[in-house]
Image 1 (cartoon, rainbow, N blue to C red):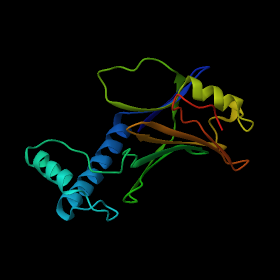
Image 2 (cartoon, rainbow, N blue to C red; image 1 turned 180 degrees about the vertical axis):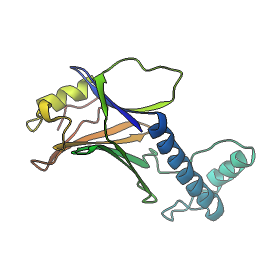
Image 3 (cartoon, helix red, strand yellow; image 1 turned 90 degrees about the vertical axis):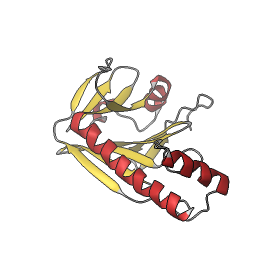
Length: 189
């Protein structure tokens, strides 16, 4: 398993590479295939909402032609939630499909913490990041203690969507959280 925690003075990121990346992608593909088959068979979303006849017709046509189409997960497609938690044993990655409830947990007993660098474009990876603006909000948060960023005090949640990635950091000591989602149009809460 490989989860790289990349950080500099203005941002931080969790990067899934190697076996971890493959495990997460394979699990997502398996779930997405099951959800899509359900939608094509029943004409409904996983939660039972009807899919319009026109859209269902397009989905069937694309599927029959061998196109790889994603299942419908709502307007912004935010089906997956990725949560990173440091524990005394290492780093835990918890992946949840919010539609089906399917989960995957992976543990990295010796996470690599390194400066942010360019990644080798020849390898596949997933990156979940707190960008420069959001990192400024995090540093200004009254509950943020940078020296405790990589222990069990904080956990980091990312929900990628078609319009951006929801980013929330939780402080287990105070029970508080900060929404670091950067839509490019608002100051932090």
